[in-house]
Amino acid sequence: MIDLFARPLDSSRLQARDHAHAQRFADTLPDVILADPSGSVTIGDLSRAVNKRLNRASLPGIPTSTVRRLVRAVGFRTRNLEEDVLVQGVTLR
Image (cartoon, rainbow, N blue to C red; front, side):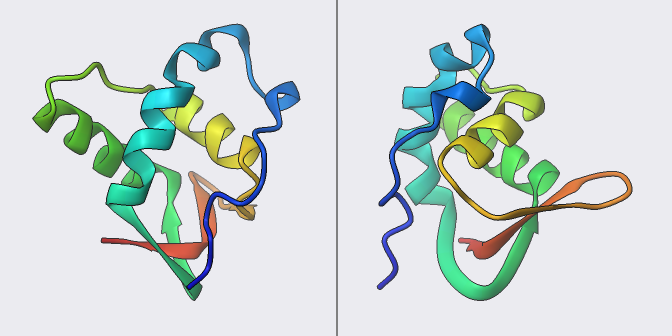
């Protein structure tokens, strides 16, 4: 099994307000994605999945822009599309 969280957080990529969401993001992410070397998911879809999970737990949501920066800060490969960003190597549960 691939360890999705083997890399430390690169906080140089984050804005000040992103730090308030980092722990909730880290706690929620394993519940919404699976490692899949050939898979990919858009930031928009990932953000909706994370926020749906947080909403069910009665926790505050995370803005999509913050999800995008947090994904990059933990070292996931991303690719810019015309209207979204693709996170590579994962699929939604």
